[in-house]
Length: 585
Image (cartoon, rainbow, N blue to C red; front, side):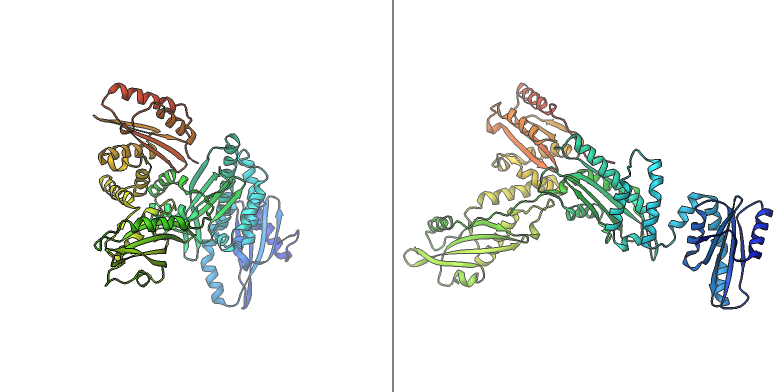
């Protein structure tokens, strides 16, 4: 677009200047339709001068407007352009829509704010959007200088280069700048927090509404900002687990393709992702508040430590020892098959078990290599029952997909995998005796009883709680009602109602505490251990989860003096620690 001192037509210029002198109230729009077709419509706009108006007027018409010229006359802007029309029908269509366009232009000419908002609704190329974002940064620096520095230019450039074309096409320059500015603020806040406390976990998150411009109109989505620091070298943020948490809390939420942006620099990590809700119903404020509450409780659990695989060849001596041991358990032809299940290894997708089987091989029974043609490694006869019935021993190698046994924290539940192996063997061999799984089976039964008692809520937390009780045998001995009291006390602390909770009944004291630093929890445990309380009187809960350490006790005593001494020692250690919280910006 050219700025000139003389318009293409002296007659047009004279007319424009005359109108500018005569008309006190601007803007003024003058159209001169073509007399024949194809032809050109000339457009003259006289408006109060503002430096951004030429570009605004050009963009409001789009790329159809050509032969663009403008100049300044006193305090007025004279803007000239032309549009080509092939037929009279095309011209009539344009003229029928011009009043709407005129109202938009009047709003933009009279208000910079309306001009920017109107341009945001127009279709720009990705290059034009990038340019507009860069042009808006100086205004951001002037208004909010305490939050931004000049490296915001570099940060925005990096974000826009990483974003795909399809992503930028559906978002206005204002939205792109907002996302970049907020991510810049998050990284800055995280960096300052880490400088003050390097070995402490810092986690910030924020939810914002984001508007997309699609082929079917405007659509509202939800943007998630997450900023955190890694404390250990092998830590990662598990994005799949994060998305599962969101979808579990709001099943109709779906990830928007190409919306994920992440930045990892040293120990600092930033993630931005957008999700949409299926259907026409908008995302309500109540849903957003619920998602914030869920993230407050579960985000820490998305930080995982990568475990290096262990190479350890199978101990054949141990396998042979079990063959001999199980052979000694078979004394009659009616004895059940004896099995031992040993966990070998895991890959990224499978679990591997070694199974030792010894059984009386009755005349009508099929040999193990026929029953397990793919799994059997070797079989042999190791003796006879009543000098006539062979004792058949076999070594099997079984492999299972680990997917059905992944817990909410992405850990593999070997208890359940082992149960699957037992079921597989039982289906083929019939009733059998699990030689090294008796205690495990009893614990699984006790866990099911415990889960039935507390209900189905927080199933994953309940399982982890149960297996965090020590000594292990107390999980079977202690009354389930006492375990339920301890669990409810723990749940109050876990849900953030307090960092300390206690409950006293006639025969037992329940108490649970939360520590942000596991070392303080261990110090508290050592202090209680020094009290030399008999094992029959004390049950301990030791539970690291979601970046915090939970310590709980069931103390069985009817003496109020003993209870007071116990509580006094616990509180002394508890309040010596400094507790931290996840921050929501």
